[in-house]
Length: 353
Image (spheres, rainbow, N blue to C red):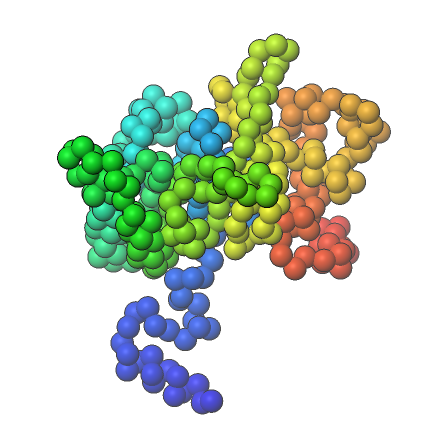
């Protein structure tokens, strides 16, 4: 077909969101990532230890209570604001849990954050759409980077639920899932058009009657369809001697459009320091023969070291050469369509051959 005819169709439509695909103006185009604060989590989310969450999509962190969902999100917010000195964040806090002290502790300047506490899905939808529309009204060159956060979806009620509760009715609102689905249908496209990311915390529950233990995300199918990335979180305690100093969070990629689904990694969420940037890289290195595990120690360059020692002194052990090897391993482990010959070619490029 003559390309001139296609161009004339686009011109006649005069719609800024209808373009020739080769022009790369589609809102579906990948526009980059935001560092999560953890190298191994970045790899699971995007296929690169230097990647992270998608920069213009919906990303959901789902798990039981106290699995670190808010800490994950605050870590991404901190990195986003650090990378965008003129950027801002709109934080929908439905649990009234995020204080200014929490923001400051994560190196987040509260003056760069708008906090909103919607009590219904409808109010959240109205406020978000209003803000995105106002953002799109600005000249594209004048727009400053922004990010939306919803913490958490599971705590949002519908208007009907609140009205029924006020009247003393215990009838379940059967329309809630449909309202959520409609909300995310609208938001997904608007966020992509505006090139704005949204992070969502959500709860999980055990599926009753399943053949084997299964977790499901609350809120119906709306978020499952609309989110570009969904990570399920579970935890176990991390101890220093007898003292509990944090949680080891297992992250399973339930859905991902940037990396392989069902991959699992473990990250360390320290109570005082937040996400450990290097934790989890040793397991990746052992799997791809960058490190060797001998009994309870790690061997590298002829030295046998405890993993804790390596994580406590990352600059000494995770050198630029080691990080280059780990990046190749991450691409092989987490990216779609990455094969042995690709690894060999990258290795030759890195070695200057």
